[in-house]
Length: 115
Image 1 (cartoon, rainbow, N blue to C red):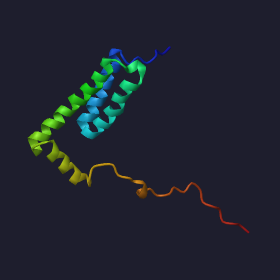
Image 2: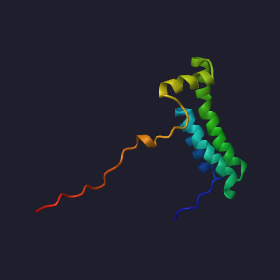
Image 3: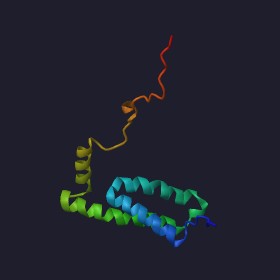
Image 4: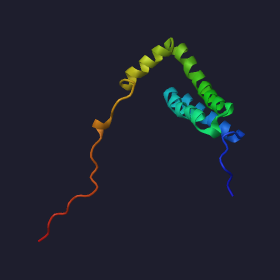
């Protein structure tokens, strides 16, 4: 028999901390995009309206981001310079509509008439 999900138990809090921390460590922007809706849920979901889930998520973001921020200052001279270099490498950061890149998917082709 499985137990109901409890956002306040230690395993859930450590998992949230670790997941957000790992995502942020690998790519800072991914960690931010992961933490943002989770923090919003901490305010919207009644069961999560406690300090512990929000602190676990924010703590993971801070722990994963600390290395990224330290490296930004050590190698690039600051966060802004690192973001500028990343933007130049990636072809521009920001929200971009990629719908024009999509190609239609052919599910089936009409069969040729046989005589």
